[in-house]
Structures are given as C-alpha cells and as structure tokens.
Length: 316
Image (cartoon, rainbow, N blue to C red; front, side):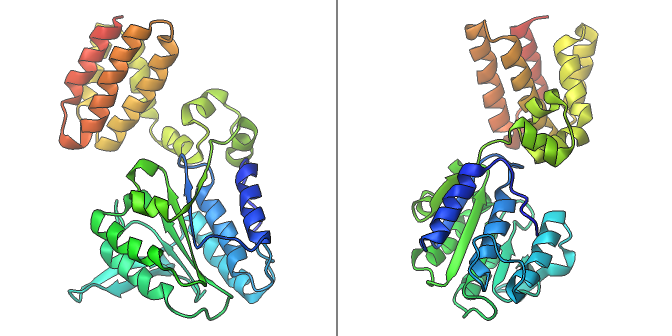
C-alpha cells in the first residue's frame, strides 16, 4: 500500500518521531473532520506497528506487511463483506464483531449500524490479551470512538486502563465531544485538519474551488454533496427564489430524511454566513435558530416551521 496520507505533514511528523524514539503510546486518538485522512493514517501507521522489520510505515516486504496491505486495501475500498467476523453474544445470538482478514494480529472495529455495541467491545477485549502470532505486536483500530454507546464505552475503557504492552489501539473520531472523557484522558490525541486545495485536487480530481469550500476540505463531504445535489439546489432556491419557490421548498424539506435535513442546515449556515457577515445581530439570530433546530432534529422538531422562521428573519 503506497503512502496515501496527504496534507497531514504535522501528523506524519508526530507519528514518525514517536516511532523512531520507541515511544508510541498504547492508545492514540485521531480526531477531526471526516474525509481528511484519519482512517488512512491509522491503517498506514498500523502497518508499521506490525512490521517485522521495524519500519515506521511498514517495509511492504515482510509477511506481516504483505498480508496487512491486502486487508487495508479492501477496507479503504469498502470491500469488507468477506472479512467481516461474527461472534456470539451472551444470549447465544450471532452478532457482527469486527473486520478481520488473514492477519492474526489485526482487527478493525467499525460501528454496527450507527453505534459500536458492547458485544463488539467484549470481543476486542479478548483479542487484546492474546499473544501476537505473526508480528511483534497486535493492533486494534476503532473507527468511530465517538459512536460507542454508553455500555460499550464503559466496557472499552477497561481495555484501555491496563492494556497489554504489545497491544496498540488507534481510535478515530469526528466529534471529540462525544468521546468519553475517561477514554480521552487515556489517549494520545492527534488532531487532523481539513485538506488544503492542492491535496484536495490530487485526491478527488476536482479543481472546483466552490465545491472545495462547501466540502470544508473533506473528501467524504464532497462525495455526499455530489450525491445530494438536490439538497444543494434546495438551499439555492430557498435563498434566492420568490415566495412561491420558498413555500415549495419548505414543503419538500419537511419530507426529507434526517441526513438530508442536517445537510440542508449545514449548507444553509455556510451560505448565510457568507451573505450576512456584515449584519452581526441578524446573523446571530439565524445561527441560534439553525443550531437549535439541528440539535433537535432527532427529537422530531418541526423543520418546516423553523425554515419559515429563518426566512422571515433574513427577508427576501
């Protein structure tokens, strides 16, 4: 697996320094926006942690690196069905646990649905105490430490309190505020920043600066924006259309699913900030409504009413 981590020179420098000094913490937490390289960094640095020749990013030649690379490539391509590992819950029911290919010393834990569940954490804890077979250490990557449900978070904490010396955890999180403070306190935190424009172009092949700005330098956000072009169009119609167009928008947005509604408010916020930067009082009023509505979307807030109120504030 060739080096794919772009535009994170500070991160690479920190990781290389820790590795070369032999001071890699047992638990590292990568946090920052989605789509800026956290998973890529975890996989690439993880290869080095398991490398039998002790190369920081892996030698690519030893048996550990060769087996690891094939699994990492599949994870990054989303081709994971055949490397899903299933265990048994306490009730005896078969449950999805994590991604595990042919490398005996590596597992990749991803949410089951929208959360990481306690059965998954229990299985990881058992794996953490096994002896390495192919590599000098074992590696557990947790994708979405901010998605551990409360029971899973408490159970996972026990694995971090006294981790085996030869087991490394690399955690990733988008919203660090949702990570248990006790997990944060036991982790070495490394922040990831949005991609710069040149790296964004190299990865995506897009030189559209407007899309770069809307995506916030996030590849995954760009993909979502492309997929959800109807939401972008709805924001434009809401802000620039006549009364009839606005009324139509309000009706349609009320029928959107939660993901589309959240994206609508994200894009609306970005557009309004740009258009109203000189009217601070009005901007603050709109931002308060957007923040409150976005927070209460899971509770079933009346989205159409909130959008109509925003329109009365900004006028037009």
